[in-house]
Length: 223
Image 1 (spheres, rainbow, N blue to C red):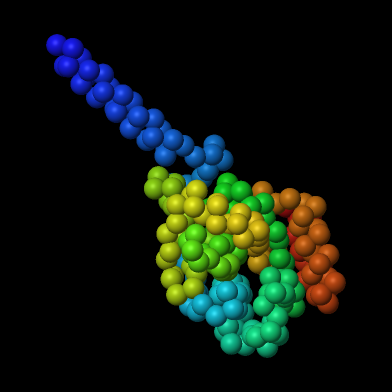
Image 2 (image 1 turned 60 degrees about the vertical axis):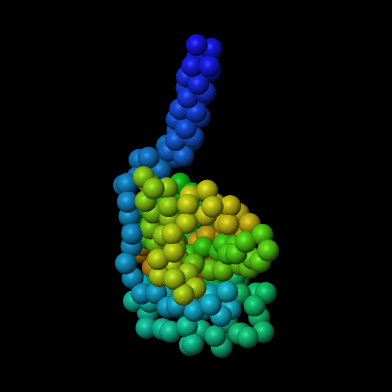
């Protein structure tokens, strides 16, 4: 009889542990719960692993804004090869030269998925690899599945790389937490931060795109 009760108690403990783990796995931020359950954006994607996939991802983002471009055409203005250490800043500068607003995002998952749910792909930098080998890589955050708690990345040679919420947040943080939108001047982000947008418009004007910057400010005033 004692042995039977012992087995029952063990079974109860196991069931309780499994239920607890399921509860933890199913918990997401309240902001994410308010978003659509599943989103995956379409759009041009250039595959490639050279230069941390930076030119490929930037060309993809610009193409989705209607600019006719290929990764090869970006290498010279990005000073590649040779300026890999300045790639992140150079890509932002180059996007502005094409008349785009580079709008920085908070690196938390709700902020990023909110933009994806609004139809805006997010350019991110994350750490790819393992404990034995890892390197930074640029990617497009193009979708998510709230139930499965996965994001969809377009990165390297993969048009549809799936990564868990937690793994993605860690990989993003490890690479510096960098995430931006590349928007047309009249294309306000979801839940736009007015001061952040105005700063982005000012950066656009300093890049010699005064008319585009004026349109960005006008769009904000018209909302």
